[in-house]
Length: 632
Image 1 (cartoon, rainbow, N blue to C red):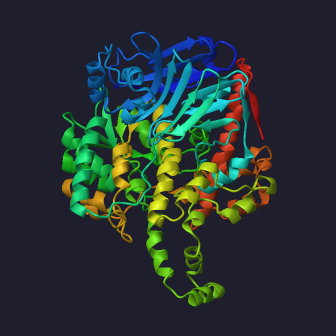
Image 2: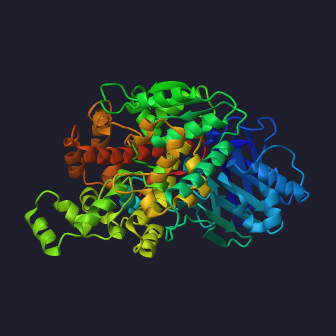
Image 3: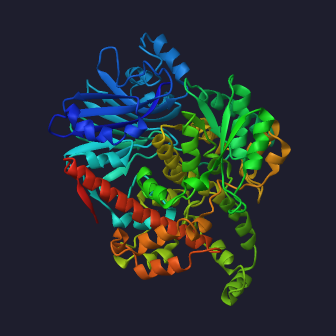
């Protein structure tokens, strides 16, 4: 393994691409790779990368070349099965010039063609140029840990690890697509392959794109999570044994590093299990970092739980009071750092703890992904409660709803199919609320094509399985993993997520439904594994999640920026939103209005994103690039 970085490139239909054409795009991603840069051009194609050195710091330069120079590649990520791949390609007669994991990519392609992707295990975005056929191959890892954006204008296609690098591309037009606002408001992100910018898409997790010499494009999924009938033949011990053994192997692979390495430890089940396994595997001391809020935010301090785990394994634990980093100025900066509008408030504590960790570490292990694959979110528990309500006779349910007695909304939800009811964990505005907040011309069906197709195809699945399938394919990569990538790379910090190894995901999604969740008992198989490595009180403690006191923050330090930004006469969102409804939401902002807080935060991040992007586009114009300002 060698480096986490950022990649970018251009394929042009008619004219040659020069190395200088890549300058602006790569400069926009220096934060992703301050240690090195590499470029390659051939006829009408060119690509480059920025590198953050993690392993084989001195020798891991990109691009990578085959022995005959006919295959060239750049990539962003880590291949955790690199030792096995190295043995494989060397056994086939190939010579490697370094310990850089990405060097095996060109040789795997030579031997296996497009099937080379099936042999990779890790997180990656890849650009590979075949000089014999003059075709460009772009690919993203199976679970979507590393992003890859695409911009097309008819004459050329550009790709990049970050959307913001396109604004430094000559001729790029940065036009907001209001038709995607409904999707953003529904999910708090825009599900792939779409974005909120016209002519910009992103590869879905497990997707590959090929651009042929004649300009033909092909896109297909080379991997998808298993959303089929779950296994129901084995007992708890069998699955816990398999999961435990797999996690030990996966965590061991994720610990490989030639630079300082630590772990994010909240004291919750997920991060605690990984910390315990890592502490028992790593041959050098392990440091842990925990985000906390002070007593003025009661109920949001998990440090005592993290401390218990750290003491059990003799781990040095760093406490980070993240409220000190949540300022109006930083929230505005984050709107640009995140690259897309994202209304997930957990980015606020993540930003603070990542900044602190990056002062001493270069690689961090994180427990992201466990809730989606092991059914940990509280919302999944609705499946159990609604199933009981459906047993109530129809006449009684109708009477209850007509009288609007307490619980009427639950009865209504019980009658709605999961394909219409579920919008993911981050759901913020329902259809009626979207019609109120958006101007009529921008109200759209809030499900883009791929999402609508998913629900059409899987509408008859057991509800829990269908909900997890959506979250693994969209909420996890487009929200959870996206913010980890952006925040980590902003601080030159690589965040590794063992639960998102595709073998772990495959195993988890084959679990019998009863072993995923039973009523309020969540993550049952993972808890069984936890019993083997953690103190009993950690195993039994209820889920708290990554705590973010959003309502208190919006009533306190973020109150003025929310009010002033959303009510400003120059607010860009005035073109899309009903201002009277925005004012009504702001008037309700305060204690006891959690849903309102989430909605206000989503509008705030949308407006700040639009403002920051517009400002940066103008900066690019002043530097001599010919980008256009935002317009709808």
